[in-house]
Length: 400
Image (cartoon, rainbow, N blue to C red):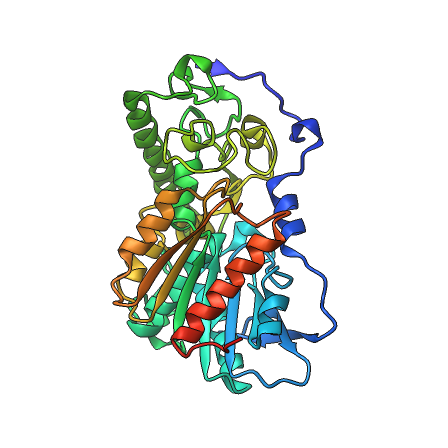
């Protein structure tokens, strides 16, 4: 066992923004003069309230709507909303009910998507498309699968809602934009398997440390196989502990517990371009030092509750993995992937596309596009126009 004495300050090196700060900057855009924006308070079927913004072109009544939501990020000012409104859509950016990532329940996200789709239907939208951007892909696929063929009667912790009894108006199309394999899978692909003590952020096994030069990069096939197996084992160990701990607490009349998962930004692809090659920057994820990101307290999946982990991040328990959900979806599906996305690798796009059983599906690559198109307004506009034209070809969106 080794105790890593690297930078533990939590601050990105070289003044770089954290991944969350970079995403927040990229997602916000000014409001054009010809677009109006309404702030909405929507009530979901179980009585919970959540917020949304609705963008529409002034003096225009849209007949086609778009919903974009992430389970743990605020997409109410997403970069796509104003451009989509200018194209003639009613474009809705949704903020789920959860105050933080640590409380996300994917089954409740489904109800928040449902109230959003229902609102667009109520204001006259004849067609509604769900856009799953980044981590929004999983809940959008989960929603549409349950809307078409409901199967989930409770959360992995045994709580409501029963989605088979919920009102889930189906969407007419799904678009995945730089989306990954779901939060449970991507956290497993990112999680650092060198951790030997879940209570200690610096105790590691050197033989499983991707940042130890003795292991690479480049990484051998043998190391990659051991590393990936150990990542799955770590996720499963946390899940088993969460299940057992929840049973213990419930026997004491205690509902839940918060906990920390250390080191969750350690995907081999971030340092080795030979693994799933693309145009991504090597060593970069929201900043120029992935090693520092791995140790920062703001990384994905760092703060959790037992119930949220089982619904959101447990690889064997989450219902929101998009690939099995896509096998139950019949509507047209478009998968769009930027070739320079920093943390969403090409295999995710190919996997989503291959999982779609609908006869109408397409995989589209955007050469050079990063994850949130930071500083790439032309590529961003080209991508949004491609989505518009793809929907228009299916009579699900306005034509130019």
